[in-house]
Image 1 (cartoon, one colour):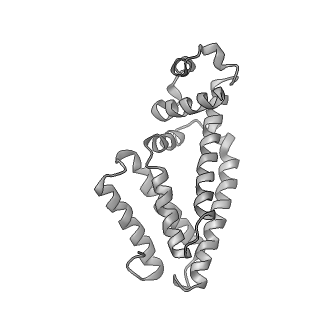
Image 2 (cartoon, one colour):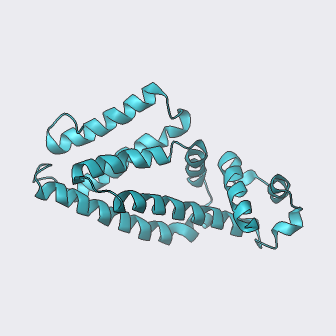
Image 3 (tube, rainbow, N blue to C red):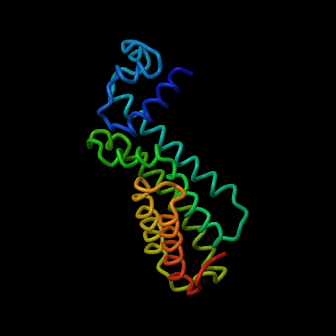
Length: 196
């Protein structure tokens, strides 16, 4: 219970300050004395690793829940995943968290690199199956290069969410950019103007 409370507060501090937050600051924010934190974490480095690992777990659980609980045609599922991932990052804390993650020292990223790679393989394979269904059902052009399409899908999403930090969820300009990014990607695949 307390370890979870520490993790939640540390995640918010990390999103706000990156690695510049102090263990004393964290302890004060949850009503503990700094030495008590070391009953739960041996070092700030261990805590930072746990923050990143926890957030990765949350993201992959979220992604899997979208894919596994979707009873819609594959073209709608691809669109749903696209918008759901972007919506996931509409939480300002999550958006800032991932921005800070990209600025971490290599030593932190090295510790989660294998987890990232393994989870990304699973995500790509799940997306591949959905895109293959679209090809088989002739929803998208048969001659698409699936590897290239998966990479482009991922990069369009990354491009959109990398700017999420600068806009509120309900910003009309940003929401239009999201829609245009989706329509541009999808039109290239199937030659139709949009999925409804």
